Length: 113
Length: 112
Image (cartoon, rainbow over all chains, first blue to last red; front, side, top):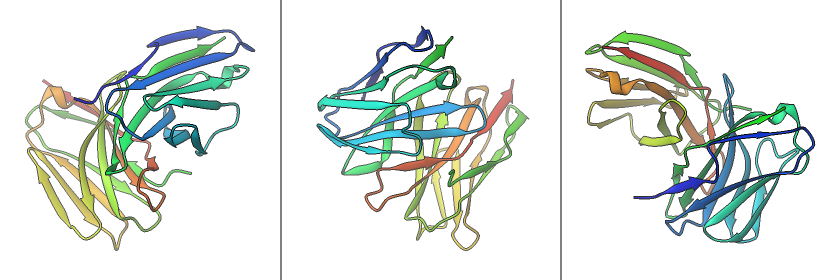
């Protein structure tokens, strides 16, 4: 079974703090994704990585950066957290052979106060 | 912007009844997928239908696709309380098929 794990289920940070969200997958997938999910808005893609050190911006990259130094790990960074970044963050991975079938982690609910 | 839009936003039914959810999308697609999300959890891939298919079955799931109307429906037959979840349609926005856009979802509640 594919397993995608995220470093925290719940996180509370203060405005202006630097926040790291970590995601690890164990299926040797090339593709990894970060989404945020807000009520009524569905999932919105923040960043996508198709290989180590490679990344592409999604729909809402502003205020976020990412890091992919190893194939299994994809980090989302909030350089200076703001209250409008309070959200559920979901990480996913997929293989190029079956690119449309994404495997999701359990999510991190981030609250910025 | 969202490619897919689900309808209804919320649905409440009794156990044993059928549940139908609809998805509309805006641009041409190669395939369309449905995902399920249990409360507070990640999404799970349910089923994919390709643009040249009109109907697909998987267990109690039936998916239809009408490319002329740019719409899809997901039917869950003989629903169970465990089907309570949010359901999302998703379509690929790039040629490689690895960047997906998701609709806002339908929240399904199945009452025992």
